[in-house]
Image (cartoon, rainbow, N blue to C red; front, side):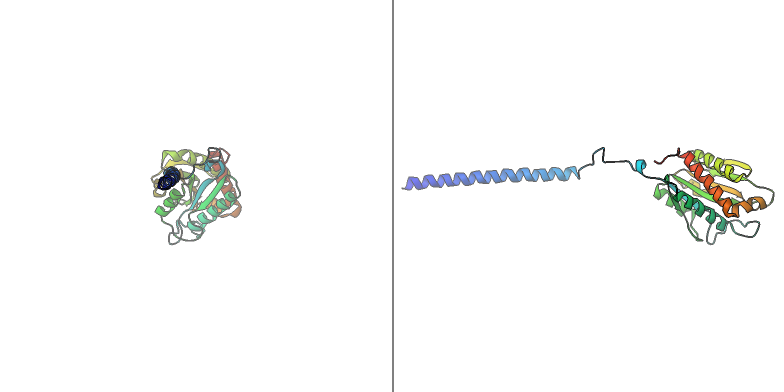
Length: 237
């Protein structure tokens, strides 16, 4: 009887050995799959499901009303302050841009608060805006001086300056005082196409009348939007 018992014991050990080997192989394969998955990271989307934001999004436009808060800007010929005019025109541009499917507008300030030049540029850079437009009104000792002038700093901003300037002139009918380079801090710190437009002279009675008029602001705002549509080719990203 002893040999029979010994044989059964050997068979039992062999079966247990086979089960152990099977279980060990399963665990090795399973854990290997987990490790590979961890190294590979999450599953990458297919080329058809990954769509560039520029194909479905909108152009991000930063509208910067000059001055604000304790910085009033230049006085107008009728005794108002530049900061109020720039905010009114910037808000008009913003409101009209909101209705345009091409654009997603942003304001550097929406009330009478002071925003530093550094913070204005930082806001634009952090947003990775497609364009930055700073709105101002000019002034001069001679009340006969009038017209529109637009400034840029980087070469990448020249085309934007040219196009916006042209459309503002078409909208306000002012004298063309040109597009010029200027080392203005708010432009120099910007890493995106950025311009500053002196839309007209607040020290000139004729310019001021249009700049402070609601309908005049609506026409100028439309001119800026027409310029943006022209600059970006008339279609969304």
